[in-house]
Image (cartoon, rainbow, N blue to C red; front, side, top):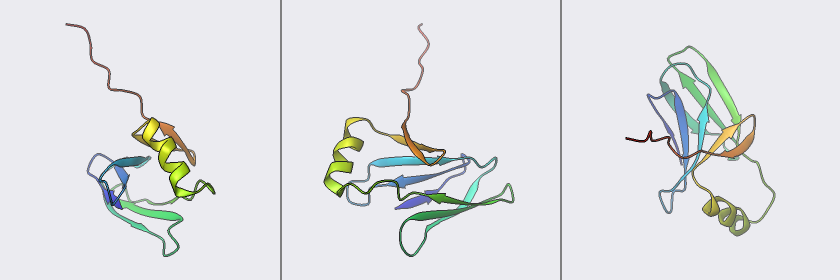
Length: 95
């Protein structure tokens, strides 16, 4: 599943578990639409920044269970330059 967000991103979700799989970041304003291509290998996003982006999300030829094990080891992930990158933990300053 893919969702559009006011935080300038689209997000990829596992429709079975609800787990965040990736973040498509690159727009400079709210993403208003996000949809998969019919073959499921790309996501199209439109934004209030006036841009349409096409993202290649078909990244692996490995079996689904192998990919899922990798994702589960370090989630959430972010799509950057057509590569999945782990999202670093949020920085919390010391009191």
